[in-house]
Each structure stands twice: as structure tokens, then as C-alpha cells.
Length: 409
Picture 1 (cartoon, rainbow, N blue to C red):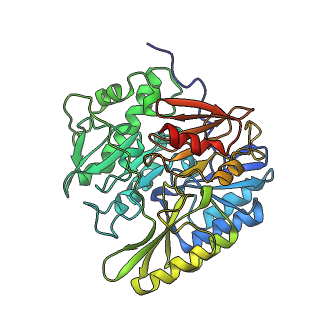
Picture 2: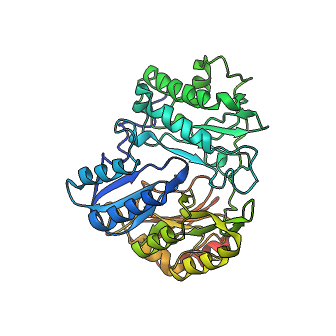
Picture 3: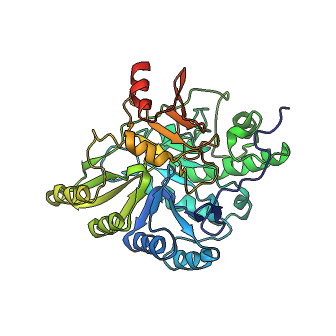
């Protein structure tokens, strides 16, 4: 057997288990399916302002981060989150990583509405003591059939093939594991438990399915749930889609969703307040570091979009901000070798390379990298090393990154 890929337990931050960064504590609040009530959103924005650095950070898993927390502030943060229902289980708070198609049940594109599955999975996950041992990086994906989430390579996923039959991809790969829609959550929980069993058998501290030796095949061999069936393990990975909602998206019955992006995934208090004011009771955080305001009367949607644009949010599908992401960088992260956010913003190196996103990172840990293929801009201490497909080159001037990448592509 090969050596395990992870040699230490996962230290992924949560709302209670705060990571101590150079700029203070970092708390990550899990938001299953990305859905937040307006009151919950306001509570997060208030906590960021009153306890942290004033910014809300959106993650590639549809979660929210609060940075700059002084020592001990996590107790107050936890109390605030509990009060608005964002911390239903202290023991399981880091494992509630559930991505779902953000517009499911609203725009008519999916085969099924996965929102009830999100609620059921979250409830049963928190109610299963054994699954509190999952790492803070183990990911569930619930795709409603449109294909926007399955390509993000969750450890255990669901994607329907008919209105009542679903596939359960493992690590984003179709292994012909299937079941009924009614048993979908049973299947997801069975995969998670089998992962933990196999991890223990391998004496591993694996964070994710692919960290295990022969992980998907070994987990399949452990599944015993009567509602699950599969053929020979092995198959093709699901594609990663890069066409994400931005602007006004029509819904049924004369309603619309207004989808905006957050530059570099960060929201100021003024931007967060503008989104709260636009909300009709619910906001949806997307895995693409954006926010959707659903259920807006169609006639009002253009005005809502204009208002959010005036606050600096991304509303144009052609915006150079779309597709550019970055880790925290200096000065917030002591391990970073550059102020990658400032450099990324100065070049506006957007998703201009055959639709690939561009991610800037300050060190080899590559925090916040988007799922799937992308252009990586890695700080080296004396410039950047850029990797685009099979091509790699170095540059001292951040301004050269996108121009050289375009020529290479």
C-alpha cells in the first residue's frame, strides 16, 4: 500500500474552531446549499463588522468567512450564529459542506428540485454521531440535473437522470452507482460512513475520498445499503461547467433571480446591506463567489440589478472580474509571498483563456483554488510562476501575467 496522501488531521476552520491567521482569527460558517434567510445574512454582516474586519468572504463551497477576529471572539460569534439557526450542531459544524445547484426549483432548468434533499441531508448528517469524524473538507454535491455542481468533484454527490432515479458520483466520477430519488440521502450518508470505515482500515488521516489508496473502489466495495446498486467500478468524470448565472435570470410566474458576483469573493458592509435590502426573504451564495437574490418581481429586477451594480458588485457577464480569484495573500496570511489580491486587482486577469478561471496564490498551499482546470498564478518571492495547461513560465511583473497567458493560449 502507498503512503497516505495526508499525514496529519484536517485543521480546516469552522465557526468554533477558528484558525489563527496573521490578521486575527478566521471563522468559516457552513451554509448548506448556500441558502440564507435575510435575518441570517444580516447577522453575518453584523458579526463581520462588530467582531471582525468588516468584510464577508465567500468561498468556493458557498460558505462564508469572517476574518480579523480577536482572541476569544469565537464564543460571541458562536452565540450569534446559534441564535439565527446557523449553528445547529457544534459537533458537526465543520462537516456541513453541502453544495447544491443555486437556482434549483426556481428557473425550470433542473430535473428535480434538490432543496428538500439539502435540508434532509443536513438534518440527518448532524444527527449521525459517527459522521462528525468527517474532515472539514469532505464535500457533498447535489446537482439538480443541469450539470453545474457535479463537475466540482464532491466526494459524494447526487445527479438525477430521470425525475425519480439518481446517480451518486464519487469524487466527481460516474461509477454507475445509482438509487432512487427517495433514497438519495441514504446513499450519500452510506458513502460517507464507508469512507470513514475505509480510512480507519487504512490507518489514514485522509481528508477526502481521493486521499485514500484506491479510494472510490474501496468505498464501493464497502457499501451494503439495499437501495444502492452499481456495476463495475470506474467511469468518466463529469465535466466542469464555466457558464454561471450573472444578471437577471427569469423564473416562473413572472419572477426573476438577480445574480451578482463579489470582486475577489469579498463583500463590504455596504454591499452586504444592499443585498439584504434587495432580498425577498432569501439569499443564495454560489460556489462561484457570488450571491443570487431570488423571487424578485420581474418588472423590478432591472432596477435591483442597477442598484447592486452601483455598489460595486459584478452584474455584467463580460466583466473582467469574473473568473479571477485569489487566496488571502499578504498581509492577512503570514505564509504568503505576495499581496496577491492587490496584484490580481491591478491586472484584472479574468477568465479570458478559453473560459478558464485564473487563480492567484501566495504560496504552495494553493488555498481557495477553484475546482477543475484553471490558470494558476503562484507567487515565488521574486515574481510569479504561471501555469496554463501544459505551459509554465515565470514573470517578475504581475502586469505581464495575462498578456503572456493570452499569447501562450
